Length: 170
Image (cartoon, rainbow, N blue to C red; front, side, top):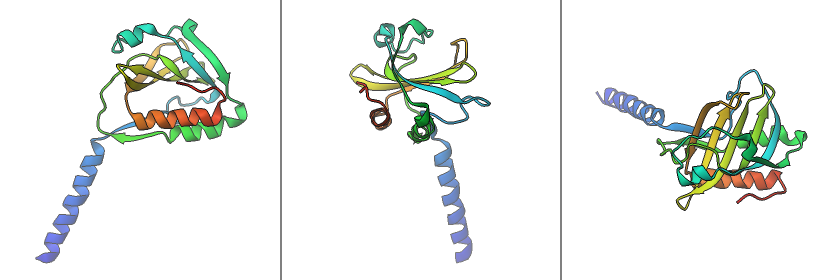
């Protein structure tokens, strides 16, 4: 009888753990499955000035390449190590509130062989730092995005930028 109780308790514990983990969302800044069958060919430190976004952050505005300013380009020799470290930033979390729907502020531009790109920017919305991650095809059409306020993720992202680039972002 005691063995059956222990077995039931073990099964319930395993089931509860799996259920709790399955309810969490993954938020990572980069993973190699974002754009399959292509590679990152260039990584740029950028600034994207989007005043509409800071006034109304829930509006998803189309990307305007004219607003994108390249501040610095990472040496190709550092691309792989940068992407490995970038892919480690983030984690599992309960569903976070969408705080920003378009890029704005300073961050990075990952350019892919197929012409697509990923923009990761950090900006202040209502006195909170927010991070936007958007994936675009070769015609600058958005394929997917999220914009959240997660201070630890933003801090790690800024530290990574400081490690690899000479220009500091706000």
